[in-house]
Length: 258
Image (tube, rainbow, N blue to C red; front, side, top):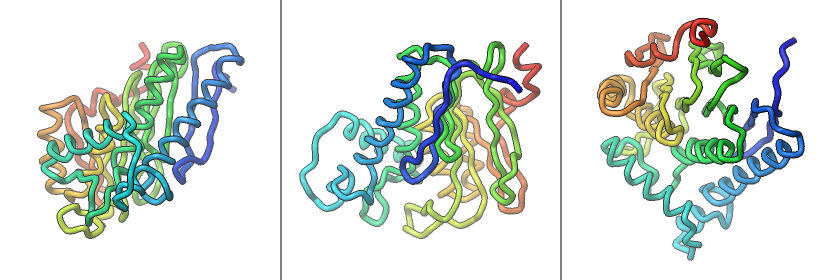
């Protein structure tokens, strides 16, 4: 059995299992506080940005109550506005008059966490929240991280990507709504976006799922030319569309590690 240095932990946060897997060989006395701080950060994000938790800042905003002007809140709201403009309104943190940045906040929180782990010396790690994944460094010496993208119909791994530094965000399901109608988008496919910032990838994946498969393909093609984000779209019939740059992350682990 292969063993790795470092440490890993899984906890329920934001209503989902979140794992933090650190592969950097740090002393045990440093690893435990790092993991404690990681999950404390994620719980703070949930307490601050959840639209359904009473007294969260988003809950208070939706009721016209006074909020605390914390820098993270200002950053998130500004970024959501920017991403709404970049997607021609297909990503929108306000649906039917209710503010809900969920399509961005999970990826943003993991991206911030990944940067904090790197700054603390844990340069080799993977953080995973229900399929939204951020990897940095190496899974083992000379080995890139191996990230599986699951099929939306069967839940088996459909494609594997390998990377040393990448955000992978996947969107699908009836929770995503068409921001122009407020109705759930139910084409039963899946959109996965890969790129350097997991929060941005999360928002783009949300927007493209809301668009539906035809508009999403056009947007993904244009996005891959303009920005370093690649897309895999799986339709409800199982057929897939991917932007050309996705091939950069495919191949065998042995070849990529060489």
